[in-house]
Image (tube, rainbow, N blue to C red; front, side):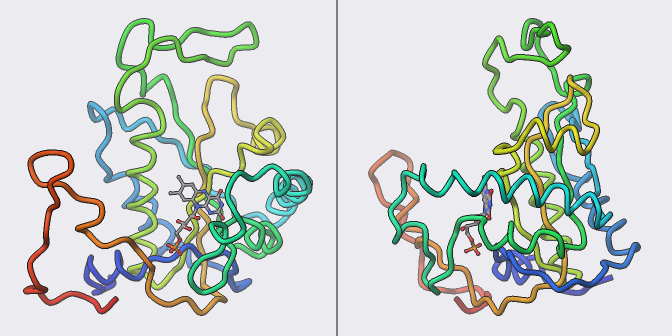
Length: 235
Ligand SMILES: Cc1cc2nc3c(=O)[nH]c(=O)nc-3n(C[C@H](O)[C@H](O)[C@H](O)COP(=O)(O)O)c2cc1C
């Protein structure tokens, strides 16, 4: 078991896009997947399904699709060049992740299973091809519980010395990647988490200060944190 504190795991979590070509030991993988299943979910439906991709051939097929997707995506971006670069000059787009995708030892593709996830009548209707479409907007719907599970997975991985990347960019090649992974029509592919040992040197995350994003009792009334009274990791 790792003895990393939960705060060290949270404050040290960075979006890692370049990984060492090194396997993740199975007991660690088992543990982080179990941590993912401990997440909260809407109505405790636990609607997640995890496709754990470790096979290099499968990763290479996904990479080939993503390289095709990235040939067009950069031209369509709405953000400026500055917005697409972080404080360390790194791109926040997934380009580096795509270029190195075949070396990521584990990609956990996180899917939503409506047979567990639907909570209200008329929430979804079936299309002729067996896929579903949303027909009633429900708060806390589809992706939300999966994001809790993904964050648990990433923090547990961090505690075991692994790095990770949360991604949604498989949507760019949704049909092709669903086909590669054999995902049935009813099941929604929502996001994917890359896991492995980092080959990048990344510092502390740059985040907006609490007072810039928090309100006290009413919108517009700034919540001012006190001077640092608790012992927490340096930023
Ligand atoms: C909803 C969501 C979708 C994301 N999708 C992608 C993605 O498709 N590709 C990628 O490389 N990073 C993706 N990221 C990672 C973000 O770019 C990253 O969390 C952000 O730039 C902060 O990085 P840092 O933790 O290293 O500071 C996503 C993050 C979130 C929360």
